[in-house]
Image: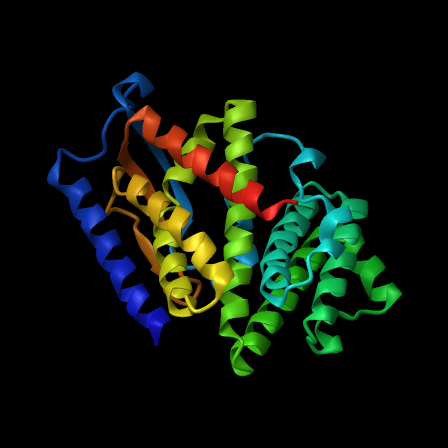
Length: 291
């Protein structure tokens, strides 16, 4: 039920953003960044409510940057995490890392991620059929990027369904959180280290998925780990409130089933220090996960 409530809330925000773009004289010309605005006329998919952790992995595609192995989670530390809530969080982190490796066809790194996903799934007593594949199947997946991506999506969809059907929705929400933080962490590093301005645009647009994510986590504040993350996430939401995003109504297309919409940004208004503060909080959140 809570997902539908947050869907309605997010839709109202999006419609408000579209009205903003209609209230002016149409699509704006490019405005230099020193005027604290960012413009992009390209129609793009924006996730406003994640279903599984790997949904957000598409957010760092097509940026023209190469693979950076230093951005993925240090796998040698995974065995240190023993609490079930922490392991659920890590499942989301590793799912995004595996998608990141798949994007650049790094089959060895993807296979290593999958090995630890299998390990965590076993510790959380997930049904073996969710992650267990024969060596032949695994080799087939790793040889074909599309097959690998489909497998990742299927595994995480099955995990999410298992958690929700077995009164473990908190694990599903924590896995979403881990995936969101990891994808944002990779995106922030691409933006800051590679000077990819477009990535800054994508980071700013994550205000919608963050609203949905914090709404889901708010239902599980009896869990210490959730409460630990709610404070910085709420602080991050306040920073995002300082950003105004307007979308062109022409070509605006909503996909409620996929919980995404396709639109061209008419204008994003923000102060440079706002984006810097978002990046700072994301880096701190990722640091808190890493031991």
